[in-house]
Image 1 (cartoon, rainbow, N blue to C red):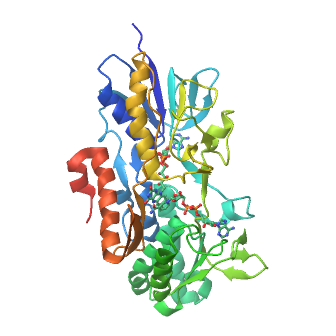
Image 2 (image 1 turned 90 degrees about the vertical axis):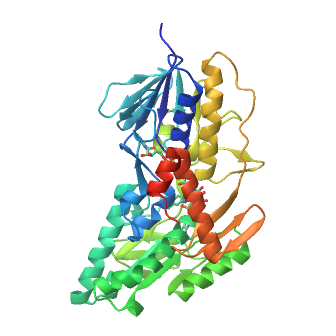
Image 3 (image 1 turned 30 degrees about the horizontal axis):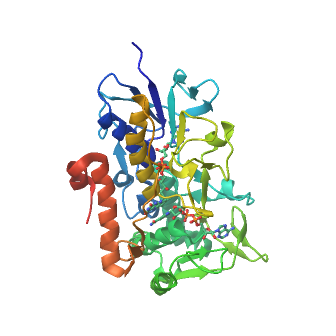
Length: 395
Ligand code: FAD
Ligand code: NAD
């Protein structure tokens, strides 16, 4: 007898939690669960700013997928999804045979939002995945290595475009990395420029002012220059051009100006807003009873405004779907809606500093940095239990 086929696209926060939840809820022979991901590993997106600055090895931010799933229950396919054909109930892969499904879960994450800014895609770097952060680190080191002989200041100027959480966390890591980097490449620290450019009137727009002021004061104290109210309008081989025409010459430009949903979702024909799908309260794609979307490709509204795309909401969506989809597969119905329970936000400013709000409590400095590490450990625990948390986690 054939059993329902569930295909889960993407082994990120949402996809992995769904797969693990389904494998736990359903008995053998109740469903055929397939998880597709382009790499054999899950990258811990929330840590990518560390290898991007060179404060941690890329392996620190990835975990082998087969090591954290029950491979007897979940059929893992390492391949790149090339198209989602909703009407044919089929997913096309770059290398393998197309996959037919009865239920589809899309958790393919995001892509950089470039707002059509000229030259960004060609000339800037992005904190996106393991290979993209390796490139940033290697490029930056190569530029620093040339400084001793060429003495051009743009070689040791780094522009970070966008002072949202990704931008701020990356700048915090750069600050930690500079002493070692300058020592290794004979660069005078005082000559290095780290410029964080933000279009909005403030760094971390919308976040608690007291915490933003703390972060700015700390990072400025370490030499970071902030330019607010200053949209980047173009990125060239030489650097960036700001609104008004001013140019900053920089050999390394890292774009942290925001994200949009994965383009495969848009291309599937589902209506999207900046590549993200407004899902119903059970995380279904509009018009498709058997298609669920979660993580950065989905939009869940909190009144008038969508929740920001985070690992926190993606994880909760995956946990929800793992349980609820199991009911549907058994012929039942989803009885409860997805309700996001925000636990707070903590952003690192390097290894020993952070800012955050947990519950109603504001945190700064060492205690916030400790909290951030606890949050990272929790994800490792959810993925691979105590063993993985002990092996990979750092306090
Ligand atoms: P992802 O975790 O992005 O996973 C998507 C998966 O799909 C990946 O494995 C990818 O390889 C795979 N994939 C993509 N395309 C294809 C394809 N065509 N074929 C096959 N596989 C494919 N959020 C927080 O809550 N807290 C934080 O502290 C935090 N820190 C962050 C720090 C940084 C530097 C960044 C960039 C983001 C941070 N975020 C944080 C946001 C958070 O990482 C994302 O919201 C989260 O990763 C989204 O999870 P997801 O499940 O949608 O997708
Ligand atoms: P974001 O959209 O939150 O921030 C992007 C920033 O870039 C904004 O402040 C925006 O004003 C600015 N920007 C846009 N266009 C610009 C331009 N032309 N010139 C200069 N600045 C420009 O994106 P993000 O920081 O990548 O974060 C993405 C998601 O991941 C968010 O939901 C965020 O909450 C989440 N995240 C969370 C954490 C954490 O909780 N510690 C860390 C990183 C990311």
